[in-house]
Image (tube, rainbow, N blue to C red; front, top):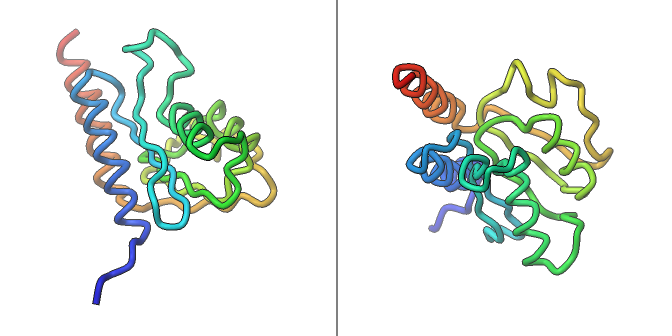
Length: 149
């Protein structure tokens, strides 16, 4: 019997995006948007590449998913992101009316939970999926960055 896709499967796809960001020298955060067990958008941080502070993985994924769906609302979609969204991304996700956000590791300093950012009332959020892998990649990136400076 074929195992159905689950949160771990999709978070591993988001982690692949985070690895792509890492390889480019970007903060290694990745995201995928899923609807009906199908990935409709893949993205990772591009803030350095695009010289744009708003080019977070979630923002890139929202745009790609909206383009795929042909509309600005992501009702029925789930965002898988390796790190808890920041306040900016959570705000954009609220406006998109995304149905569910699944994140890997918490951002205890700048995350939307700490900042008490309001999501859309119907949006569900779940964390801790592949948490160790997401946190380890992020820590590795910042240790290497500090050692270069």
